[in-house]
Amino acid sequence: MGYLKEHDEHKEKSTKAMLRLCKKYFGKEDKYLNATPAIAAALNYFDKGDEVGEMYLEWTVDEFFRLQIKKRIENIKFIYSQLVKHKFTEKNRYEYNDLDNHIFYLPCKKPEEDYETMTVFVMTSQTTNYIVVYKELDFKTKKEEKIYIYRYWDQYWDVHDKKDKWDIEEAQKYKNVEYAIIHSRWLVDRYSDNIKGNKYVFRPDLKMYKKSNFKTYYGDHRDGGFILGYNSFMSRDTGSIGAFYEINDALFQLKCAYEEMTDLDKK
Image (cartoon, rainbow, N blue to C red; front, side):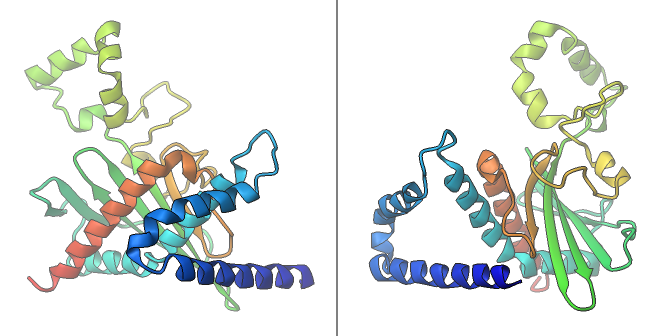
């Protein structure tokens, strides 16, 4: 316990000292652009010349996004409460941005542990679908919060009509290898690979998350579809640097959803 206390005290003191330096040298917005060489030099200080080299850069990005999601915890709770209050479910989705975006909450089963509660909502756009899972663990002596943001993909026949002539013709085209290769990026970006015979699903669909009650195997970037995680008792998520742009997009969608839910009661 003594080591952990000393570790936490050192982290708090060093963080405050770093912030004092930032305010001293980069207090005005017109100086922000000059900050990047200083930040890079600081990261380079911790590079001990091993083969990885960028380890502290990766850890810093992990911690950066952990702080970003921590700032949004109350927003996430508010979004969910608004969706429940106004009964925006999967069959009655809230639409915005000229019908390009939708948001709704999903009922979920009670987690196995009595001390755990969970809420889930979904944000969709023309190109991406995100699931936001919020968990609270009450251990009587202390509380722990967990947040997971996952991406899910559409099943091909969920958005196509098996009886529609055009859709049937499109499906036939994709059986041609060359045609599928040309359109591979579109197929991967849009559709789930949760199909019969595939044991290793990397692009889950919504049905797959529902079936597992929104519980994945690892709960980190080793899971297909994992975007971002937060745990109030852990120092950082891992692997965020590899999903940088996806995380940015998810947080942007979260910002838009929060603004919509904030304006909801004003209408």
